[in-house]
Amino acid sequence: MVSPEFSLSQFSPMAKPRNRSFWRLSDSFLYCGGVFLAILLVCSFWSFFTPTLNFSSAITDPSSAVSCKESGFGVNLKSDPKDLTFYDDPELSYSIEKPVKNWDEKRKQWLNHHPSFAAGASERIVVVTGSQPKPCKNPIGDHLLLRSFKNKVDYCRIHGYDIFYNNLLLHPKMGSYWAKLPVVKAAMLTHPEAEWIWWVDSDALFTDMEFKLPLQRYKNHNLVVHGWPELIYDKKSWTSLNAGVFLIRNCQWSMDLIETWSNMGPISKDYKKWGEIQRSTFKDKLFPESDDQTALIYLLYKHKEKYYDHIYLEGEFYFEGYWVEIFGRYENMTEMYLEIERGAAELRRRHAEKVSEQYGAFREEYLKSAGNGKGSWRRPLITHFTGCQPCNGDHNKMYNGESCWNGMVKALNFAHNQVLRKYGFIHPDLLDSSIVSEVPFDYPADEGPW
Image (cartoon, rainbow, N blue to C red; front, top):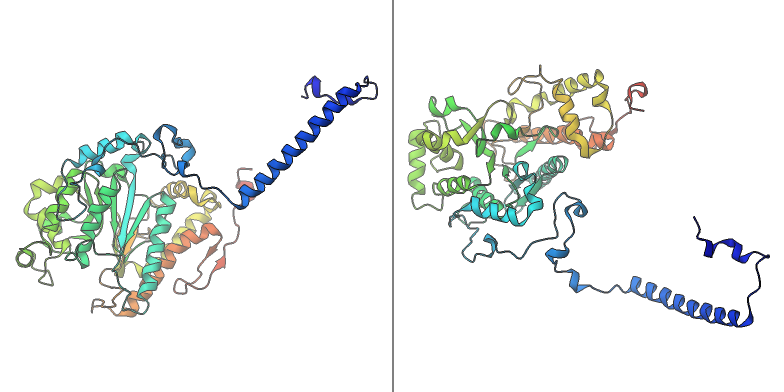
């Protein structure tokens, strides 16, 4: 509502005329106002074309920090209080050779100083992966690694996870399969806000983009790997678990495990001896060098009372699945999932990528008869191309390179279809990445929410 003093009635023909002195005064005010407005316009254009750097805003004062709500991420990304934390300790080392002590207390203190990160910390995951520092020898190796990384980025974006990709050796002696441990330790120190670090090998691909880890199942454990107790303790097999994919809690127990685990690797003066011990203990081990997988199995086998209760051997679903028994079934899985959707309109409904987890939860109700693991038509969470060596091309001789590369392309497109579909397209042929088709709209109007 317009206030009375600015109403149009002041300019009515019936209003009384003002005296001459008043008009002179008004003209003066009008002139000054015009000059001021012109100056303001010039300054505005000048600041637009020559922006001034504000150095005072570069350093955030915690007292004037943006609130959590304003950050848009549920956490305050613009505040790092001046309180001392473990980061200020000159003795802190990220090196795999220097142990970290009292990590639980240090991490807790950091979270106390960063309360916006404390909420939800118990389910916060950072995915860590990586590859070698140099270009691949295999002509299509770099392309496969790029797509493998994209696959992991897609999965993390859908579920709100951070991801770190490393392509350097953080310790010169810890190469090949041992290279992951220095990276995982560094990630734990770099991400005190995360409860879990999830290592995923570069040749391991997410193939169920909706599935979310059942973290509640692991609440009393500190390490999760795909494995089978009977193969460890009865068969004494070096393939009784797979260390190429593991979920490790960000805590002191894990720091101690990584220290012990690493000391069976190339940084140990007893490295050769550990290889001999592993091979004499696990008769099916194929090569003489100590490796990270057999080392972890050895710790479980020899020190069951110390480690078994803290390590969850996940065998109820494909935490990671052997590609040979999976990649030939992708087409059948696709058809079975489409068959479910033909009878469930809520699963056919187009939706934003950000709410994909809800549709994954919807789908679980229809997957009870799918089974899990070998022979199941449920999508495997991860298909692991163990032995394919996509970068150097030196694949296991029990299968040829073409089956490896074609298998990886199929897995990548199978997973990509689950993402691409939300953008309105799919790959009609899992072996041809270059062709896409538009997805038709098939959500019945009479079943919609409108």
